[in-house]
Image (tube, rainbow, N blue to C red; front, side):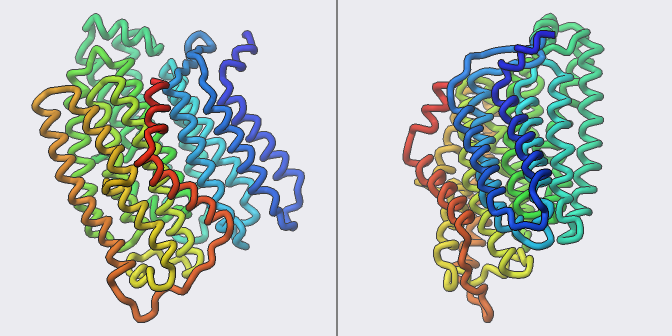
Length: 478
């Protein structure tokens, strides 16, 4: 083996270095001391990871084509690393709690491990490498969900996540076995070449459907979404924010890349499947979100709906779709993490309460937090001039490039659902600004890390909407 090939895996190599440094720092320091330096150290290391990823990287492959990376993959790695940095910044308050401070090192190592698995998954050129990367991300994520196992039903949430992840992995392996039986190889390029010959079509289509079903669980697409609300509610809020954006973004990008690259000869088949998944995900999630009274469950159904919008970009099957999906994930990361940061602040200062009624009159006691949360909710709803409006516009345009009548119908349904989603996002705004409460939440004084995380997210929500630099950067890398 030529070990110099590891030099072609710069993002993964640097994440391994961060993992080793965090492990040594956690092992060498006293657990009884106040490790105020630990969070800044990890954040600086992750900032360095983001900077390294930003530099353009030529398309390379390693280990016989099992690892393949492109500029588009590198852009998504940068976005996910930046989102992870925001999560690490805002996690300090939660990790300083007496019942979680001794698990601080474990949280950082598990988070970096999941990001490493996602990177491997996105850079896979072989179904075996893809599956290994997926499991590298899923197993540590289950540990993160269970990190607060004695609080807020975290253990129950982790059990549901593990069972669902196991079931989805089994379905996915079943699909991969069909593909291998039909084409005789697991290399992405070779699979595409054999599929183009239209041999063993029934077996290959079945394998593709099972594969899409397995990844549908990871992305929380309807009807594979049943685990999402319970897991989001029971997991620590910081972990829920990470799960809702970073994990979902990586899985969505990977599914798009495999459909457009590997299953390109079967495009007429997976396009119809995608029509159904997108319409069901957006519509059903919106209808269920209206009924929610618990904010984390509300955001769970919101994330299912957002997953439908993200996958709308795949239908176009073109470079515009790749750029639109990457841009949508970027905007979704900053907007969703802003909401979860505010939820975390309220939860930490209100005895773990995450009921929507607790936000009645929130503006009277915490006007700044209310304003920032409003910005984020408006972006998620697609209200101009916030970034969410532009991300939805690009996704719709990418889908319409496909040109068929069915695509126009699907986009029209998505547009109608945008109005519905705007309604339930405004329910929170109404609670904060209009509804009154006999005992409103007290005024909170946020710590520096929370302020920094909210500042980054708010800047992203505003600047991504009015500044074309971010989309231009993504488009130039496609």
